[in-house]
Image (cartoon, rainbow over all chains, first blue to last red; front, side, top):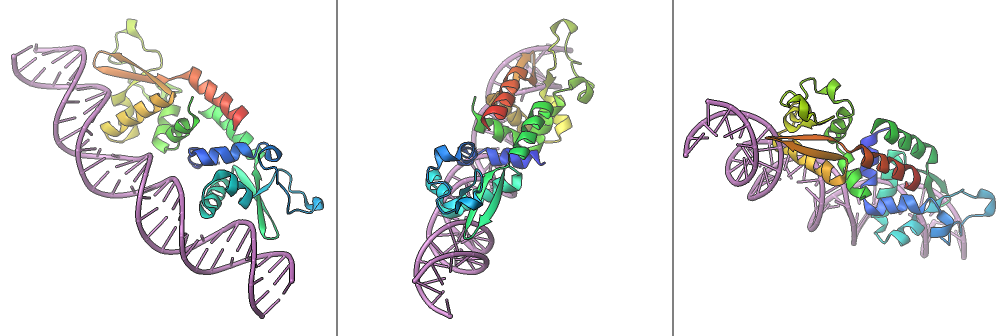
Length: 104
Length: 104
DNA sequence: ATTATATATCGGTTTTTTTCGATATGTCAA
DNA sequence: TTGACATATCGAAAAAAACCGATATATAAT
């Protein structure tokens, strides 16, 4: 765990929003999973395009944000066909919260 | 509480170090309180010069760091004579940790 | 009053981050 | 296999942050 990378990832409003939207994907991304056959349900995952639309930033920027958040450990991704689904890495986030509580 | 400012303040190694050093001031700043008459003990506070020496950055940089961390709510300061003592704002840090656990 | 010391602020340079459009890559559908 | 779409990566411009030395301010000591 690299706290500095994590805090950097969190110090941008759009990225922070994305992380929080992904706490309740159905609520914030009503179209969620439209592409997916039910049997491959990517629980809690949302594709880049849907996130981009809501974030109102360019495709390349959002793609970059997401991979930055993934490198930091906040998100994980699954590719299904031409789509990449991102979801929160709850285990890592939990660890970070614990780190915050005990080490900060 | 402005989470983005807090995360920005935390996304720098020196600033993160300072915050952690201040968890145990006596341990990390042996000279601590040398200037102070005992009756004005600034519990847990360390003066800018001592922090600067340990942080190995310029005086202006450290001063800037400290005021940035104070604006974010992580630190509080007390001036005693020509010295400014900084210490952790434990209450605020606790709130931030809770915010992290519930909102992030 | 003058000098010394601690900290804050100013002004500017360097480095990093943000952000985009263009392009590359990978996948699906016809 | 060609064309359409989703995402990733590249390269660059603009904005922000890092960081310093110089200077200002405030207090203390002589």
